[in-house]
Image (cartoon, rainbow, N blue to C red):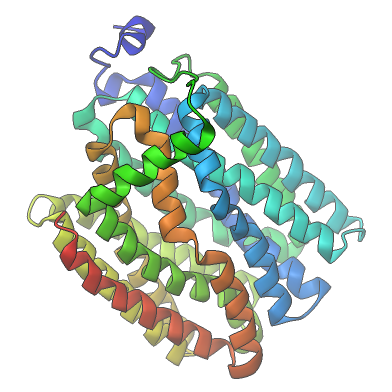
Length: 403
């Protein structure tokens, strides 16, 4: 029951003995760890280079602008070997994050170069996430998808628990540039882990029809599949709100609340603990409630926690509220991923995921820039409160999802 079974679309090994998915999950942990450091380092670089909330919004918008390229990412994931795409993206991010870190340490990093680097890293990340989502069903049996998505969410949450405090300490002792170099090395290690996977992407082949026809197949499938359509519509509102919040979060904690970089790292790490708790609760709730109910209550809880976050300046209350928000998100994410994978045929997997990401993330660049504008005029707390209101409002749409 080796590679032949994978190639023929047969029964894959059980989850405990499935070495191929273990390699992929290991690469995820490594890159997730580095990503958490990136999320602290880049805003601090912008703050150091400009001191402007508007520039912070522009940097975040540059990183999120590649979401508009999701149709291309979906077609690539369905036409090319998904494993090779993962390797290309990991190597590209390794080079770019390392270069930005070195330039910052050398005091030779113009702000426009940082923006271009953030955009390019965002392109690689979009392609990677879409290709990985589509690749997972090639590695595991269908009945193991929910477990794998939960494990992947738990891995992300564990990295959120561990990495920010470590990254905050490194950055406070050395420099944000040092943090990016650590992030760069994490991508190199993730590249090595993916390179060890021997399973090709079954059923993926070049198609004779045009790029646009390929992309339209994904759109049509999402639009006619009610659970996908309404879930994506709810996520559009939710992601708009959380992007407002996340864009200004580090700036808010550093410039408004006046926390140290190490305290920011501690706060973010505690949010990882909340997310791990949410992952544990997800397994319990999945057996007792429908996806629709879980998504509704998690979205509402997460949104309200963000609103309250904007009203407080007490460190431990901020920790508690941020942990509640990440716990809610960690319940939602595996539900959404499993729902998409269960209702989508393999040959459409990349394009459906790309279409869903485009629908739900299309407002992210504008929201990121808007966060900077609102913060400049009304303050960072106003940005966070407005973001939380949008996220809470999204919960009402899940009632229509029928998931």
